[in-house]
Image (cartoon, rainbow, N blue to C red):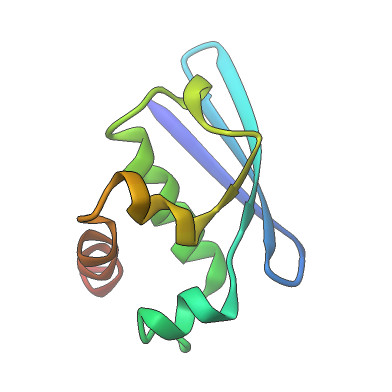
Length: 93
């Protein structure tokens, strides 16, 4: 089972720790106002957006492949379906 822990570090930046079995991976995630505005998610908790985004990535790559620093608005470059799936994840729960 994979566990994802999110910690707000400073405005627009979150620390992420992912545990998969006995392996722990950490990264720093940037969540910009522009990203939130583009998705029309201004009332959504930033930590939840980051959590669902990391869960999305972990369905596609192992935690050890996560970059040490990641900006959420760059995910669509590799995964064009990211915005739509993120909206669906956030609206379902």
